[in-house]
Image (tube, rainbow, N blue to C red; front, side):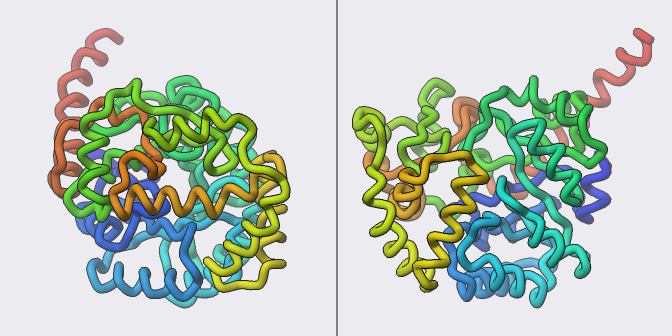
Length: 354
């Protein structure tokens, strides 16, 4: 069995983490990953605070294993979400770029592990200085918000730059990938797209089949949907937003803030404050904040309702290597068995060559 610093830290059987994906990482998938020996992470980016608590309770009904909650530092309900995570004794806090200082300060005294996702060397170094416990490092191959650099180049640079355990993400789906990540110095892998295409995933069957049919050439990186670089499957929707040009106007930011205020059930000033924090964290134009409610709606249309052509489908290039819909347990055991077989096969050869 492969044991690393990340398996010891998280108390998991396999060094495999399920990425916290908005509109995809719901309780059934999270619990299935935990029960199969990995770390499941709830994607709570678009949840209200009370919905986060309810989802945590649903996960607890399905597993007694540790799990994480993913939400952005600029979430308008961030303080309430942190209160809930502390009260519910969630094991892992997962988040992306932004200022995580208050997350770390609030959670560390309660033994909550901070596991941010980063896409650049400088962000990984900053996360270590801020007090993160480990880092998920996602290269440009990954689905969702994308780095500029391939995992094979970025991963060893980050491993050399920090002392924290690093988990590799972006392009992983099997045992070969796990072994490669370990060879580069990672302590495990994180997968999003591969876990979407499993039986316990609540993502609509239309979208699972679309992922299976897709090749590695069928994704696109666009900043016209979320306001930031985001990798997704090409369809009529991405064609439309890409041909529109400069995205949505600055003047749509105010009605968009009102829409988000209604969506989260919080005052508009909280939305604007979180929007400004997001603008600074992601170095994005203020006008692009107006795209956030729109992107959440289009993602839900695809992943939840199954709209293949006018929905938004975040997806990694690894879709070109996915050909089946296993249970999470079958997938995890297959990855572990393949990785162990490869290590058993190559270790004597490496020793003989030394």
